[in-house]
Amino acid sequence: MAAQNGNSAARVLVTGAGGYIGTTLVPMLLEQNFRVRAIDRYFFGRELLSEHPNLELIQEDARAIKPEHLAGIDHVIDLVAISNDPSGELFQNETYAINHRARATTARLAKDAGVKRYVLPSSCSLYGFQEAGVIADETTKTNPLTTYAKANEMAEHDVLPLASENFGVIVLRQATVYGYSPRMRFDLAINGMTYGAYKTGVLPLMRDGTQWRPMVHVKDTARAQIFMLTAPHSKVSGQVFNVGSETNNYQLGPLAEKVAATVPHDVKIEWYGDPDHRSYRVSFDKIYGLGYKALYHAEDGVKELCEALASGKVDRTPQTITLDWYRELTAWHERMRSLEMYGGVLKI
Image 1 (cartoon, rainbow, N blue to C red):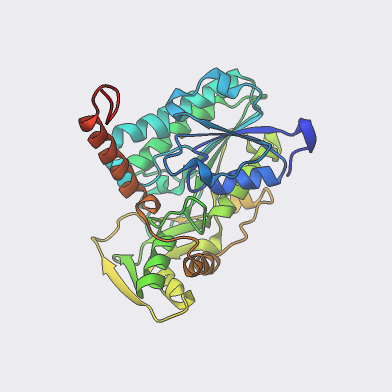
Image 2: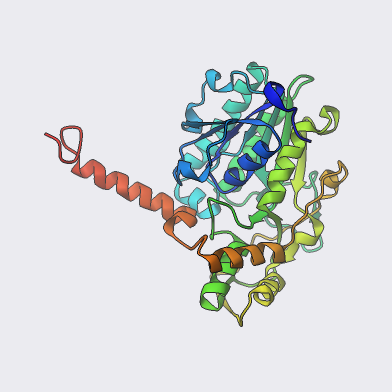
């Protein structure tokens, strides 16, 4: 699965490299001897990606990617996205521009540049609400309910037809991600449950707990993306794959109980919100048929997060709640614009 050592190592362009998945994926690519060109606005900090001789950091917006960014690139993992439902609803125009149109443009540029593989990380949220008893596979009719899910579906529709004999296009519908990452997020189900349970003894749970949701550890989805760079072209190009595992399909009520039982002290479950109508159980047989296998379970993610919280390695800040951080950045920008004169704050 690793690239060749030395100058012949494959070069991978990763967009959204400074995000939750990207800051886990990029070090894993480097460990496997890939050379990485990492593009991001780096809203959460460039320092989250450590310096490495095979890592090139480029601060750029995915909506402004140009042909020169694809020069010499063998593979693209197009991670960039406004990455959750609340952010997608608040920034709808930006979500369609980034999650859909920017990625479709990058895929076309990649094909024109002679890139061999293009991987589009998408989402199992495309399945939306499914009837009881339905286990959604890649042929199941999608039912996107949110801007985030709809933009992902539109991106899928635009990039898949680009697949050809020389240009592999793979769509990965990721389950809800969990686990520790350098760009930490506590606005994801298992991570948020764990933070509340560990820090306050109260586990927040959206009503009514019967909804199904597939989960995948951040390292496992990163592994799936790397796996697709070397999987046989004839078996993956032009294909959609769900990423997760059957053992990580959970109803949220029992999942909360599992999280509470793993945290090293007594925990009370506290319900909030209106009933969540998104409910989907997902099959991962297709990707397993290629030889991929997820390695982590919910308890693993809970334990590593508890350890990170206990050591002070991570804590909840505005940066760990995507919507809060976007709001804060937007407020700072507006305040600076209102104060700026003569090209600066204290200049004249």
